[in-house]
Amino acid sequence: MKDSEILAHFLEKLWSKGFKLTDEEVHFIYFGQKYTNTSVDHVELALLYTLQLQMTFDRSFYISLLELFARHNVKNRKQAILILKQNDLMD
Image 1 (cartoon, rainbow, N blue to C red):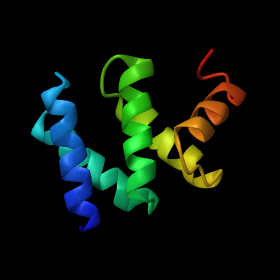
Image 2: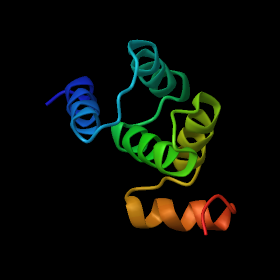
Image 3: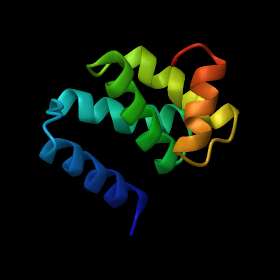
């Protein structure tokens, strides 16, 4: 499966759980991935924690998380949580 298909599936999963992103926000999510040259895994983690911590889609926070996860080569949720805690973004 292509990266864009994996990301589309993840976005559909969020939609089914009640996270209704606008078309503009979805376009920005793809833009953020290209802008930061990050993996789909980083996009999924950044989007997940943006929504969880901000309770809405915050574009600048999302980009910051993409950059943070890429810089620390985060591979999974456990590592993401550790990095978020180390940066005082999560308790």
